[in-house]
Image 1: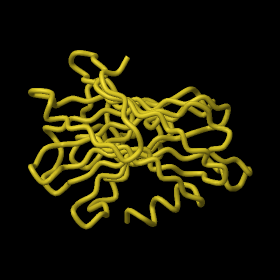
Image 2: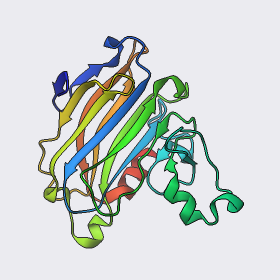
Image 3: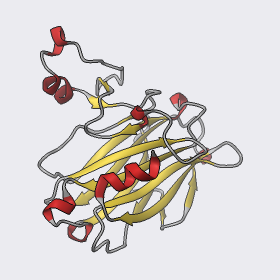
Image 4: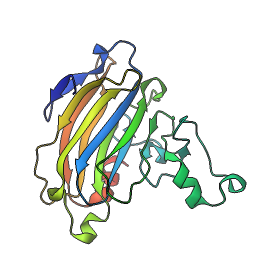
Length: 210
């Protein structure tokens, strides 16, 4: 159980945790639909500075999921791109954020990993989002998603630091900005509960952050 439970709009300072660097971000839900977690690493201007700073299932910058080491496509090693993407996970331009492998069955959540020590100085926010794959096309919205939540975990100790349960209905939305890690005025990282829904799916989020 998380040490702190927060609500929409609340902030939780990660500076309370001494020497905290490696974070696991657990995004959980109950739904039969195919949901995808993603992250946008943005600067002070609110947009990404590199295409690879949009970390999502189809990202072309990939890493070994066990080591987090950048692993570019090599035909002699991987055979083809489909095989390469199946054994790797998306990674940000600065190697600080590892995404989740795509679970086409829907599943009950996805996990992302953040190494705060590796975050580029030009990045001031990491926004975590969830979208419904082809939600608009298939007439699916977050109204069918039950018990969505995000939990921040100290990856070294396994301790759950804080959790945000989304209580909004999102009856027409197909994309949700769930929460973000943001640098405050003191230069420390905070976890901020957002809970902002959007129509238009992933494309709407891309339009916001690029």
